[in-house]
Amino acid sequence: MPTRRHILAFAALNAIGRVSASQAENRPRAVATFSILNDLVKNVGGERAEVDALVGPNGDIHVYAPTPADAKTLAVADVIFVNGLGLEGWLDQLIAASGSKAPVVVATRGIHPRKMTDEHDSNRLVSDPHAWQSVANAEIYVANIRDGLSAADPAGKEFYQARAAAYLAALDALDLEIKAAIATIPPDRRRIITTHKAFGYFGDAYSLEFIAPEGVSTDAEPSARDVANIITQIRTQKIPAVFMENITDPRLMERIAEETGAKIGGMIYSDSLSPPNGPAATYVDMMRHNVRAFQRALTS
Ligand code: ZN
Image 1 (cartoon, rainbow, N blue to C red):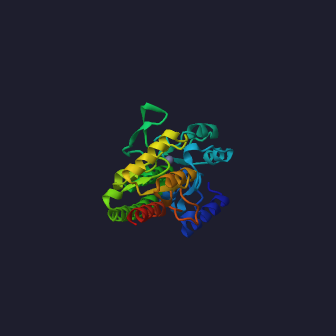
Image 2 (cartoon, helix red, strand yellow; image 1 turned 180 degrees about the vertical axis):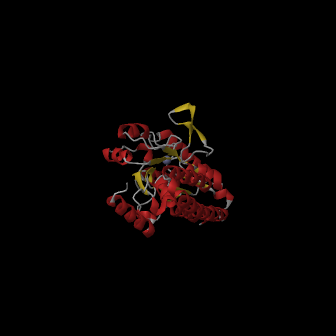
Image 3 (tube, rainbow, N blue to C red; image 1 turned 120 degrees about the vertical axis):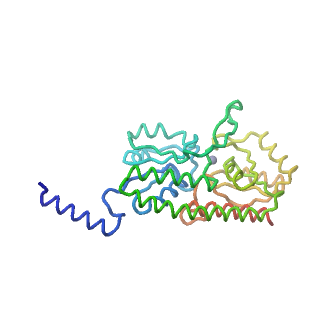
């Protein structure tokens, strides 16, 4: 028999439901491993899902050192979104330590990974994890996020589908905008130096060549020989511009610019968003900011 308390609680829930889905008792708690993925999850989850990131704005996910607070965040998660492709090397241990039994959704599932030689072992191929740097890939992330949220919160399925569809339309427009911006750059100037190899997917998708002294991770400093090779390459190929990344030490790029006369094209965002008041606080703003920086440096 339902008690008076049950009935009151049910009435209260109903009232909440009429106000807004955001105030429902059962908001799923989602955790994303880093700020870019966090923004994609928030765009699909809207006010219905509670979303936290482990590695925040300007953080370097390659060399992240998890904290006890991260284990607590994971322990109460209903669903965990990860990039995969080897990006979060520290995560399995953290999940085990947290005791979390939440499903882990790999946002890059279904993406065709770029393969590169491992900097630590030239006989080994590794996957390039920076798949979000192509908008077509980000659209695959969004589909996986939609399905992951729907599985964690079946009552919200239609909500997530509608949000994902609207966001995918915005990403289609962003993709066209990037292609139009790149089309203004003369093909013989489409070469850029960045600190680490984070823009391979961008280069493949939008016909730009990226060269970097550091590998696909930021865990090792480039050797003197790597830097000397880049300097020679900039001179012989007349590469117009070098860029700083928000997650890496700017001094190496400053030195390379000084020795080669290449101009510094400004700050770009590779693996992490800017803080909310910065120029790359969302995925869309990040991609837009980066392509404008490339365009400015290579067309002037
Ligand atoms: Zn990276």
